[in-house]
Structure formats: C-alpha cells, structure tokens
Image 1 (cartoon, one colour):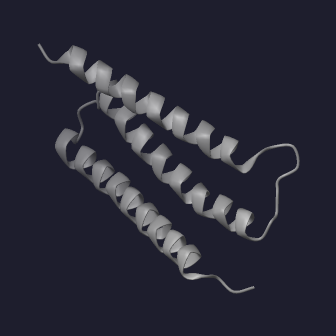
Image 2: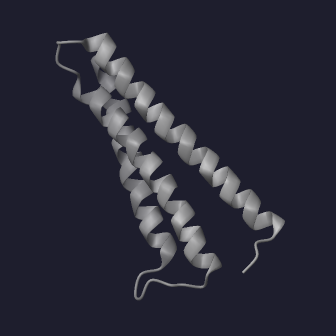
Length: 107
C-alpha cells in the first residue's frame, strides 16, 4: 500500500507534534526539578505537568489511530476517535484544574 502526499503530510505533522509535546514535558519536568529542588512541588504545577504529558500521550495515540484508519482496521465496538477524544478531555481537565489552582494561589 502506498501513501499519497496528504497521508505523508499528516504523518509528518503528527510526528512533529508528538516530538514537541514530549520534549515540552521533559523540559517542564527538568525545570521543576531544578526550580523546586528539595521543596515540595505545588499541586497546581503537578496537574499542569500531568495535563501536558497526557496531551503528549494522546497526540502519540492519534498517529496510531490515523494508521488504523489508513489500513481500514477498526477496533471492534470502539470508534477510533472516541479513545483520542477521551484522552484529550482528561488531559485538558487536568490542565484547566491546575491553571485554576495556580490562579487561586496568586494573591
């Protein structure tokens, strides 16, 4: 099976998104380790990092879902998009909760 230009573009942009989100997660973890050191990390910042990592994992899953759609392989009983929608929703909720908690911490 050969891919057209659109399929290669989608795979390349999804791969770039995956790489950038995982590198952003790694940089956030490194920043947290150097900034806080031995002090306890606030729950708001932990939720923000969890949401960022969750979005990276969901983005990585999107490339797999796209591959399944290209090869016409459907998961029995579960539409491909529902799994990705749930992963992004959970990660977005973690980001929103962390941002709200951070907003409440600032006087």
